[in-house]
Amino acid sequence: MIDKIPLPTVGRIVLFHDADHIDPFPAMVVGVGPGALSIAYLHVFMHDGARSMEDVAHASEADGGEPYWDWMPYQKGQAAKTEQLQLELDNLSASK
Image (cartoon, rainbow, N blue to C red):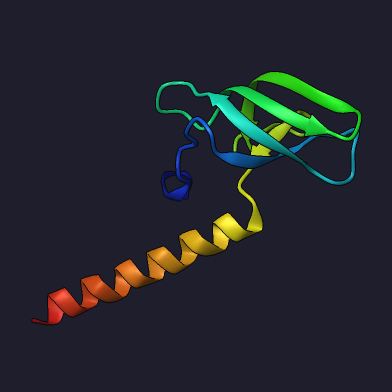
């Protein structure tokens, strides 16, 4: 299922989760690693100021307790809609 997770790009907004807080914080991707779900640099907007984080893993790759990033629910919904539309188009093309 990891291959269905879109790779982050610089400028994207994601959610940053850590063990010290219940709710996630918005974060901007400011640097990515080559072809990996680990974000090299993430600028996190926390309630007490912004922080820069390095080597933040995606939720699917994070070990228990370590900070991780994930797409926002809206972004996941948009990806699911796009995937469904592509499947329908593929089925239409196959039936012709």
